[in-house]
Image (cartoon, rainbow, N blue to C red; front, side, top):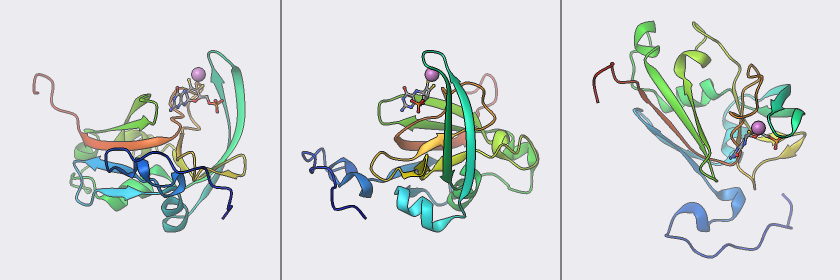
Length: 170
Ligand SMILES: Nc1nc2c(c(=O)[nH]1)N[C@H]1C(S)=C(S)[C@@H](COP(=O)(O)O)O[C@H]1N2
Ligand SMILES: [Mo]
């Protein structure tokens, strides 16, 4: 690892915000059997890495070309054990995900988008962009099937997984 790590940040509310950037964990929470707190290094060593060259449009900056490496979001979430009956497609089809970045930008996905029996989209939690590790910055969501870049959430701080309530429920 590089010895040129950024200076320590001032202690903040005892959270992992006061840890060195590369040691910061993001949480996978919600309706899960095994909630997780992971660093980018965990994403790199615990799951097989995919490589994805992508192009997306940014409304303000035009087309962006990047390559990303990282595990499939589906593989990581499988380890967290979503609280559905995995044998039942209807159960799985009711789950939603939210992905939040350090600046508060967040987006929603459906479980079905990443489920092999439905959309089967190869969405990644990136550990590197254009060959550069993301340990200090935080993981980035990679949605190769999106034409627009808005869901490529940078500096991920949290992922929530849970069931969409039936219409009329709360
Ligand atoms: N955390 C965070 N991630 C974000 C955004 C943001 O505002 N905050 N903007 C999104 C948008 S609109 C686009 S187009 C891409 C831009 O990625 P780039 O700056 O690497 O080209 O990042 C996405 N990820
Ligand atoms: Mo954008």
